[in-house]
Image 1: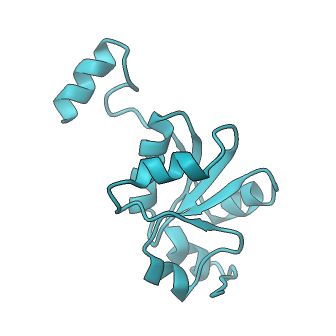
Image 2: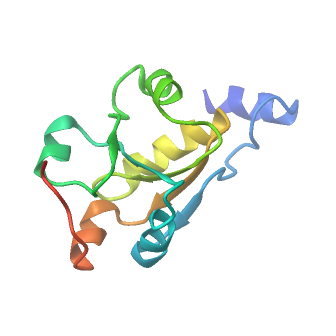
Image 3: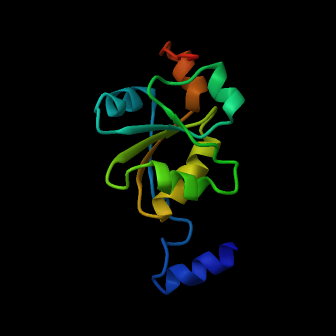
Length: 126
């Protein structure tokens, strides 16, 4: 699959091979980003993880599901910045790459909700 992506990239049909197509930010940068009411907060963990605590206002779309991109396209406005997180930042980085590949501007929270909680930031369970 990676070889195909690189070939397509060489032909200009997709993003450059191995090139990051989204931004990463730390907790403070994420706090500043989501203070903007036009930014959409996306949690890409499982339903159970989301129920254990999430950032207020977050939309849940599990990136582990086969239809993740389709659900995201049906739910997320393409013109808005997507502030994306998971537990530690790995799944959200993967999801951010997928969404960026279909035209979204994504910013990934480095360290995920673990870093968020360690920084003393609030989570909700409703």
